[in-house]
Length: 179
Length: 159
Ligand code: SF4
Ligand code: SF4
Ligand code: SF4
Image 1: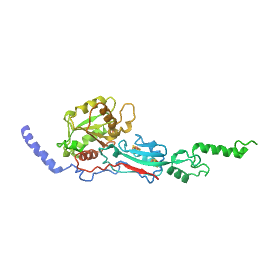
Image 2: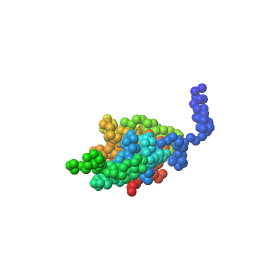
Image 3: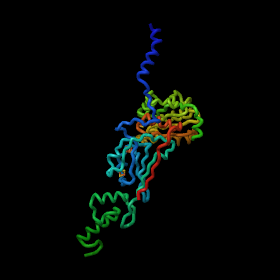
Image 4: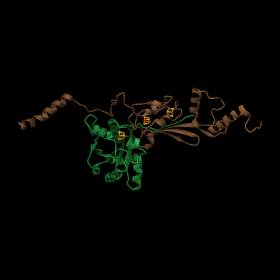
């Protein structure tokens, strides 16, 4: 009995296999099947990004980093560390980040894994010192919220000086003047 | 690197080296070997010892505990030896890149290996968390020269 089964078994398998047909996908020689929910690499639109750093705060593995130098602020995206959670997309105030379904990111050169967006930092109109914001961010804030002409585009030190000056002018006249 | 790759004329035999990953990437490696994705189309064969392997499939951010064993395994692999760093853990440290108990990805590993005089002929990076099985197939096809490299760095300067 068992001998007969042994002979019949391969035949049974052949029958099943011919019914099922070929299951192996042809990838990479055909388009891969990707579900609509799949999250892949993000793309930052450099024409929209204002360099606010909200995405940097939200990113769990610090794949997005803000590198600050003397007069530049660079947003660096390291895809090799990204976990594709798309939290950055949710927090970006201007919608500069777009999620893609791209997963074909393999490379032999680590430099291919980095994206950079270089922003300029604004200079204080009063003393010329470089402040924290980027030029685009200042523009964005001024469009959203009204700031008196007196205070915008100035470093915190100068702003403080102007504020104290203004108060003292109103109450007792200019600072340093005896009345 | 291409020259050294040419020396692997035969199929790529891989050794699966888990260095403290969360096991999602490991499952995807097994996925890539199932009949559905069938990495064996490209000659990929999972072997049980690094001595038989050409390529080490490295998953995980390399914990301090696993570091000596990882170095042993890499030393045991015959030249030319390649590493495919899988997942965001392998290629950049992932969410564990700055914790106290990991060294944070393959780049720090290569540095440590250099200090000890252990050479690696090439490192491939496959980002993803976890990687799709297709991403692994793509990496293997890239090594075999069947597909073009698509990853490219972008540098944009804002006026
Ligand atoms: S998708 Fe997640 S991990 Fe990737 S850059 Fe955005 S916030 Fe960071
Ligand atoms: S949150 Fe958006 S606008 Fe802000 S730095 Fe990130 S990408 Fe740029
Ligand atoms: S890359 Fe993500 S899925 Fe892969 S081992 Fe690391 S945490 Fe797990």
